[in-house]
Length: 201
Image (cartoon, rainbow, N blue to C red; front, side, top):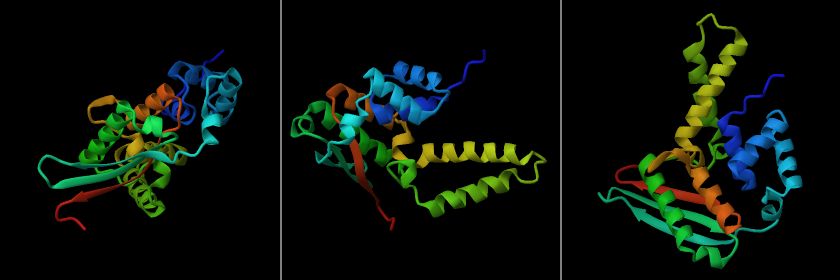
């Protein structure tokens, strides 16, 4: 019997949405043939996911942090939310927010998550990617697969949560958020950010 290959990005998405461990997520996705929604149900039934409980709680506490890059030419304001003042005062939470601010300064993302990337920008990139592979004599379904892969790479460049962490590239910013969320038992949300660069509009 063939085993379904589970993409790492799906495992990460499930971890981010549920706060469950990596192996639990991988097993749930394998059990459901890669269906994320069904995998969430599996994790909830097993008690490994805290997403349902967290989803009912508003993340209204947190921290707004500013970060100025050492050369004084780049500045960042970022808001990260949690559920309680207790976690908002936690040194590990402060460290997380600091790391996120540094990431924004270093990589200049344009959105927190890929769903927040402006649709017109996504469509522009899609047209470019289609133009790059058109005329290659590849079947339409292969071209679509290539374009989808290029878009995923684009999201990893411009969507903060999908970016590789500059300090440890094997982990994403979503990894950092979900790991601390699981540790403190609270929902943690990167709400918004603004990045300023000297001389830019």
